[in-house]
Amino acid sequence: MQIKLARTALGLGVRDLATAANVAPSTIHRFEADKGSMHSRTLDRVQQVLEESGIIFIHADETAGPGIRLRK
Image (cartoon, rainbow, N blue to C red; front, side):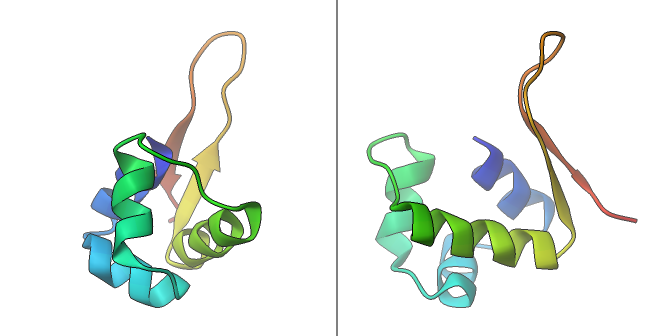
């Protein structure tokens, strides 16, 4: 869920993110649709691209679930 939220917040299409992270668009589609997982190295690349583009990932805690926010 966080990947799709982050991608959408940045105005990136699936192909844009896939190209920037050097992965197949189908990998992003499948992951966002919860129909498959990503290898940890692939997920790290996707996360790095999103973070470098201004996303901050917020981890779940006892009061709220996971989320994202944009860096100033």
